Image 1 (cartoon, rainbow, N blue to C red):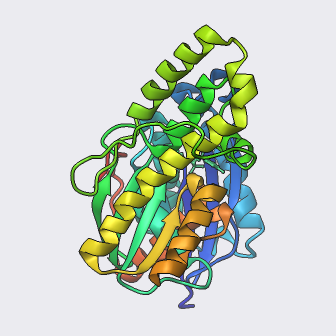
Image 2: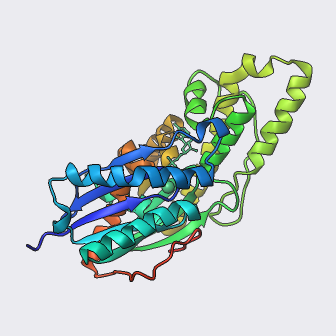
Length: 335
Ligand code: KG4
Ligand code: ZN
C-alpha cells in the first residue's frame, strides 16, 4: 500500500515515549514518566538512562499493539537525535537503529526542538506560515520563526537557565518540592503579583537570561528571614505571584519585540511551562489587545512526547530525508 506509517521514539530527558503516526495522523502517544528523579530535586542523567532502558521496549510494544498496525507494515522508524542528555539519547538511537535494521526500513533523525514546534500540527487549529513559536520548558527557552514545517530559525534564546529551571529553582528556595513550577502557579493564584519587585533581566536582541532571578530571590529571602523566620510561610502566595509575574514579564517583553521585528502575528507556545495559567492569561489578553492569533496545543503535546517526534518524522519522510546506521546522537544540536 501507499500508507505512510512511522514509529517514533523520544528519550532525550526524563520521559520515555513512543508514538505511531499513519498518513500524518497521530494514532497514539505512549509516555512513561520517570519518578526516580523527584527525591533528588532534578533529573539525574545516569538514572534517566537506566529508566529509558527499562521503559523503552514496553512503551514501544504498547504503541504498536494499540495502533492496529503490525510492525511489518511500518514505513520508517524515527528517533530524537538531540538536543538532550547523551546517555538518554543513546538508548533511543540504539533501539531505533536496531529496529530499522531488523525490518529493513528507513531511519529518520529528529531535532527535539523542531519537534516541539511541530506539535502544533498534530491537532486543529493549526497555525499558518509564517508564525512565531515560544518554546518554554525545563530545558529550553527559544523564540522560533517558523516559515515552513522544516524551515525554521531560532531568533532568540536563553543564554543560561531555561525559564522552567527558574521556576523550579526559585520554588526550591521557597521550600517547595521538585518540580516547583506547577506549585508556584497554583499558589500565585491567591497572591499579589506586585507585592515584591524582582529585577527584570534585559538581554541584547531577542535573547533571554533567567539565572539572575534565582540569586535575587536568594538574597531577598536571606534578608527577610533574618528579621522574621516565618517570612516565607506568611508570604508564600505573594512571593509566588511576584516571581511568576517577573518571569512572565521577561518572556513577554521579547515576544512583543519579536512581533514588532518580524511583523508576524500568529503566535504559538510549546513546552511544559506553557501550562502556566498566568502565562496563558497574559498571552490571551495580549492577543486580544494586539490582534494576535494564539495557538496552545493540548498539554499532552506540550511536555516531552513522541507524538511530536512522529509529526516531524512524517514531514521528513515526505521529503525523503533519511539517515544511515552510522548516525550518532548530539547533546547539543542546532537547526
Ligand atoms: O516540557 P517539560 O515537561 O520538560 C522539559 O523540561 O523538557 O517541562 C517541564 C518544566 C518544569 O520546569 C516544570 O516546572 C514546568 O515545565 N512547568 C510549569 C508548569 N507546569 C510545568 N511551570 C510553571 N507553571 C506551570 N503550571
Ligand atoms: Zn522538550
